[in-house]
Length: 484
View (cartoon, one colour):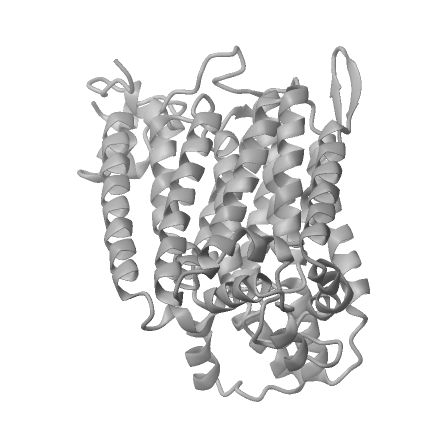
């Protein structure tokens, strides 16, 4: 068929007319390629997991797990698990070394306290992989009716190739457990109902006691929903989170008196953050800028509150302004709102190492139902922009911060001053730019949901794997149908 005679509305784009590339405009081919890639990425992940399990003790036990295990041993002996950290940081500032989590993690690791370090690390590593598998199962069961098989496979690929995930595994961190709790909370919110709100509140309550930062997700549990039937204020989840968190803290205080030590002595030091280049949070960037320009930095508390107002609050407001009965639908709107607020969490945290960014996988998963299709109408532009930003953010989040050292040295910015501080800060903040980009992606999705559109699922039908360019191709003679 001569493409010059094809009506403009159905004329195929240039890549769709190039031999080889045009196969990617066929839904069936894209699905097969994505599934095959997901299988290969999973095999690579398994091989890397087996290698790390065999090599535990050679490198990765110099870091965080040693502190976790030591804290569990100290608690078992009735000693203060925070002694090492407090002796390293005698004044109100953060420094490396020592256990700095609430006592819940040390209490939960009591069974490992009676094991030697290397076997305990191997058990913890296996448990971490099982937690990741459970996270994928929970996410699949909660989102499978909102995404196509191709999108689900693509999310598996994104997970298995995500550098912050491997960093979390290398440091034997607690990040995967937190990701599981956040996924449970997100799935419960997406399903809706009073039971879902309670489950979400309980999950986030446990997460906030395990590591304080998830407390920033509390706004997702206090929501205002506007529909044709009226306006409803949802606070049950927030109450469940508060009751769970408070109940756990009381039990921990009864179990060990060192729970109070954490809040009295340890948390104030962590809260001030650090100017360390590995701290990719916004407060960390501002602290570095103040230090390099030799100006007085505002208090860490003021910066934290201002950052929360600037990022968490707009995401929450954008969610509340989005109608649950719009073209995006109630479940996709709740998923996108949860993702937008979660995307703000590592930005405003006082300390965000790259392995903390494993939580961004949850953001991508809950944005996927809205990003999967470009609807007709005014919502098309923001969704297209959001899809591009999601890809850019994934790439930026996967950049190892230390890769910027070579650029800094070759540009002569090792000791920046004056205006040279600006390019130094930008070059060393690739992960932060990725966080900001993903947060903006969530806002664009919510903005699109407030615009008029005609979506493929508006009538209640389940989504099918048909990219708009594939639909154009299928209209041509000889085009392969997307589905049988």
